[in-house]
Image (cartoon, rainbow, N blue to C red; front, top):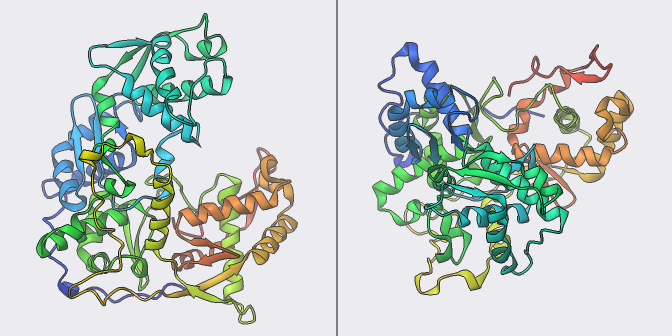
Length: 488
């Protein structure tokens, strides 16, 4: 697998890219820059920061740099930082929807399903500012008619699964400080809803911070109305500034950004040095720039929800070994892999929007105030000087499902089924699916009918095959020492 081709150091402002914003962390002394960057990473990786979340001391750490972070995040990313003495909350602007954004709603690593998300919204909506505390019994009395009024949802206190959903939702709110348990137990209520109960204190400020849609949801006719539309509606100068912010947001929110998949204005902004360098100074991460795209590399593995490569987890280790075998296939001149165009981010996004809008309850939209969806930011129907500058899709290798199946079988044969832990030792196809899913989230592979496309950033892990299995004395399980052989 050949490494990504290097790109010459950018010079000037390509194709009219606007000059960069003021210097990030301008008021921070060099000796304090590390502390400032740590606070920035803290704000960017946690949905809400309180006195106890994510850990004691985090709130003070973020508040120390609140003024500087507010200015820098607004200038570079277009984000709004809300900081009070009791909480810090970053309000993001969405340029696109993607399935990984739901990972914020989870318990014990398991994402919320649609029922849990619906109950969460209904519970938040039931809180009244006039009340500073609420019992679980009162919550259920408010939730029941609201849920039963929605076709396909409902709530029945005699159904164990429904009660388990309520407990998960309340635990999620408690973890973020929106509720504080003062008496009783939600688990005891779940076991016996007639005798069990719980009493919660309500923090209305945190509740309001947790739910801040860009526009009133009852006025939306499509999920696209939640997205930022600055780039398509602003004047030329404002468009350039918006493109730089959109490029910065893509770079901070996604593992890698490919020029071929980005809008022309965003790709131009990414090719200039300013956007990436400002983010590097803001976060302390390293910029990796290639001809195909750009990414921010985090050697610590703490500025991501999915560190890769990593020491722990059979899925992570299997993903690294699958990449190694893919590299061997690509470097084999006799493999004769087909090459297909790089998938279009626009098509993926339109498909996701269509699936979300298919579940939109039309009866709940306030039609006289309905929000007209802005022009699709990924639309190829463009006018003006950049109308013909859309990137042509690049060809990337296709690895068929049958070949992937042989790869996972070879790994089980080479390392032994027991090396993939009890969970996966009898389920090689399940482990393969989980590993490919991880690599797809990292934008290293892209699943298509019949196989996967190998995206350019996968080449940075071509030497991961040097990570040989070693035996851990504690449990005699095979693990992979990946940190010494490939970057994160």
